[in-house]
Structure formats: structure tokens, C-alpha cells
Image 1: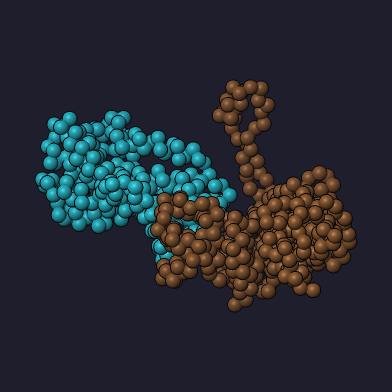
Image 2 (image 1 turned 90 degrees about the vertical axis):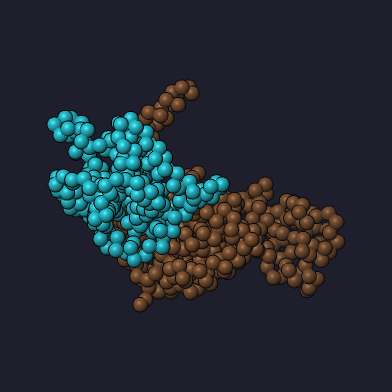
Length: 377
Length: 262
């Protein structure tokens, strides 16, 4: 049976409780007000007239600002929220990876929690038993198997949740932003596992602000804005539309995502010229703006760019559907004690951010740079 | 549209989740303690032998006759009350599971029911000792519990479903029920005899309206060889039919809103 999702004119209205605004003149009235003001029940429309279809082979990116309804839409597809009006039909087994660190019993052991989460996902005990060890291994928690879950760090819990949620193959994967806590090693394994799962599943719906990830994984996209579907199409045109929406809101001074930190980019070429390092590359941000922070990190020390010039990169713009052509950069750095590029081997990181002070996101190093560091041509 | 009968049937076919999660809830509470699971039987010992013995001497009743009376009354009351109290917040407690797509809500009602039944089973040795010293114990009466206890459970289950739904929408219910049950233990004839309340009096009328009284009485009276009033049976039969009808309709109508409410 082929997997299929069809959503027809789906609207969802939910009651939410709003506390009355009260101007607190002093501590007394604030304490008192917090205690006695009854919350108001307000009906809020989270989704409005959403219609789309997903067929086998579709990998659909759900784009939109925070609060645009991305997670809500995933919950509707998952059957958690029933639409107020409209029709949803989902054919095929479905796994949602929405919030992976919840649904545990903190006092029970890690092993018991794997059983708990597994049975909550409707798995049979027998098929689950074979997966316990692989799950522990994937999460890197073999030694912790009989520890109480409460003693794990937030990152370890996230890893465990991820390992459990992704250890079974389903026809349809619904996924919310999974930029997670985890060391680089785990993130690499997680990414490989995700790509494997998404490769094996027939339909993927992925909500994320990470444009690079969406561009890699998805072939289609939909853009949500205030609960309405404002665009649907192939991934490139959807990203373009999304960037236009973001630009419009940025012009109003309201970007709507904490996405300033969500930059992505690539360092393409590195050369050493008269003691000055010249780096060419490109850098873009999830909200469509052009970030300006490029920092070299050499053996743990940070060196901000001494000069940074923008340049057009039509190839990148085409690939990601960006609005601003000037996402490329040429930056120069002065790093003391560097005689040749070979001195940087194994010690170099290129970090990006909206400005030099907040540049913490490692950029991908192009093969050409690694070759140059290894003393190649 | 979710159907209660379909969901319950599916829950009984797939008991792993609710059985495991309720069992974990119980055992992890005692992990850190020296006596461990022995603490599970402590409340029944205290209530049956302690409170029961105390009230027996207060009412100048025979100790050996009274502990058996208290033992049955207390264990039935405990199953009933813990399901009712916990069901009012069961959906809110399970919010992470529900919002993650586990929408077969009957599982969460069965979870509190299973928890109450685990406690009940563990208290059975204490009850057995109390019954062993009870004079006039009826063995054929014990056999009737095979019918009457499931009847009580059937009622507990629909109450659990209805209260879980109402509790998800109105959090006041959880508070309300919690407070009511502080009083309900004394209001129900468990540590006193029903015939102390004459039928005509106000207290007698309240006692006879109290459904807990009939749920306890239908199990307890035959075992102790006491006459079971016909109206207790009628009361329970009516309650079962009406209650399940309400539960089925309410579940069909409101189960879909639970993820939004919690």
C-alpha cells in the first residue's frame, strides 16, 4: 500500500487562556493580581483552510516564522489535534519526532525507560528487546543503562530520545526542528541515521529553520504564515518565497525567529599572502538576512576579520533561493606565527555569526581548503 | 471520531504500555527506601488493624469480627477512590505521551485502574489474615466476590473515563474530588456499621445516596453473611448502565478535544 497524506481545507481553532493584563503599581498588587485574576478563555485560530497533498517520494519542508503553525500542522497530521473543520487522511505508518526528550519516568532506569517509550510507541515487547542494546549504543549510554534517568544530563536524554524515536523505520516521518544538544560526534551519527531513515521512508515532512538541512533533504516545500498556507511548490521556489516573507517582516523590524544565530555557509578558498590570510566563501542566515561575522579560530584563539568585502554569489543564491545576491565574502585575517598554510593543519575552524561577537557556528570547509592545508596545490 | 469500545478493546489487546507505566510508577517510589516494596502493604495494615481495631474498641465491637468488616470495606474503597482521584488528572499527567501522538486515551484510564489494582492485590494477604479470624465468614459468600468485584470494577472504569474527560477540561475537578474524598472515607460505612444510620434520618439518606456505600456493600455483605438490601443491587445495576452510556457518549463527543485542553 502506498503512503499518502491528503489535507483538505483544514482549520483548527483552540481555546487558550489569557491572563488579564494589569498594570502592577507595586509588589502587592502584582502578587494579588497574579493570584486572583481569572484567566480569560479566548478562541484562537491556529490553522486556517490548509490544503495540500503528499505522495510517495515527497520530502516536504515546512517553512515559516515561529508561531506560524508548523508544529501545530505536524500535530494535526499526527492525529493529536483533530481539525475543527476540513479533512485529514494519512495512509501508512507514521512516526512523529516532535519532542524527543519528554515522556520519560525520571526515577526509572535508562533501560526501563527504553521499554516505556517503546511501548508508548505501540511496539511489542519482543521486537523491542532486540533494540535495547543498539539504542543504548547509539546514544552512547551503555554504561548508564541501569542508572536512574534523572541522573542523565539534558543532552544525554535528548540523545536517548532520539535513539529510541529513530530506531524503527516508518512509512511517514513527521519531524520538528531537531537541532539538538550533542557533541559533534553524536550529531554526525544522528545526521547519518536521519538521512538513512528519511531515505527509507516514503514521505518526510520536516519543519525547521535550518535552510541548509532543508535544502539537502527536501524536494518540495510549503510556507505557512499566521496559520495559512501561503505557498506550496518545489523546494527552491518555496525557499525563495520564504525568504521574501522573512525580508518583509525584517523590514518591519520583526524577524520572528531567534534565527540570528542560525547561520550557514561555507569557506571555499584560503590563501596566505604576505602574512595575511585571505578567505573566500559565503555566509547566509536562516531569516534571509546577510550576516557579517566571520571569525577564524586557530588552536582555540579567535581572530576576527580585519577586513570583509561582500561579493555576489549567484550560484549560492540559486541553490538556496536567497533574496540578497551579496552573500559571498572575501575576508582577510592576521594570525601571528603562521608561516605557511600547513601550520594551520588540524587547528583551523571558520566560525560564522550575525556579527563577529556572536560568530559561533562552524562553517563547512570546502575540499579545496583541506587540500591547501595538507600542502596540496 | 474515537469510540470508547474500540479504544478499550485495543487497550486490552495491547496492555504493555499502560501495565508497564503504572508498574514503574509504583516500584520507583520505593526504590530508595530500605524496606522497598514492603511499604506497599503498610497502609492496609495501618487501616485494617490499626484504625479498624481502634474503632472496634470505640464502638465496643468484637475486634475479630470488626477487622474483617474493615478489611473488605477499606480495600474496595481504596481501589475506587484512587481511580477516581487519579483519573481527574491522568490526561494532564500523560500530556507528553498524548501530544507525541499516543491518542488512545483509554490507555491512560486503564493506567490508573491498573495501579489501583496492583495496590489491591498487594493488600490481599493482609485482608486474608483479617478474614481468617473473622467469625461467621461465609465461603459461599467469598465466591460471590467473583461476580461482585468485577461489577464494582466495571463501575470504577466508567467513572474513571468520565472524570478523566471532565478533569482534562476543568482542573477544578481534581481539587474538588481530592477534598471530597477526605470526607468520603468517613461518610461511607467502612469503620462503622451501616445500621447505625437509621433510614429516615438525614445522615442515613446521604449514606444511601452515596454510590461508594453500595459498591462496598455489594462485595462485603455476602462475605460476612449479612443480608444485602435489594436496592443496593438495583442502585448498582442502574448506575452501571447509565454510567457506561454516559461514558460512551462523552468519550465519542469529547475525546478529540483532550489534546487541546491539556
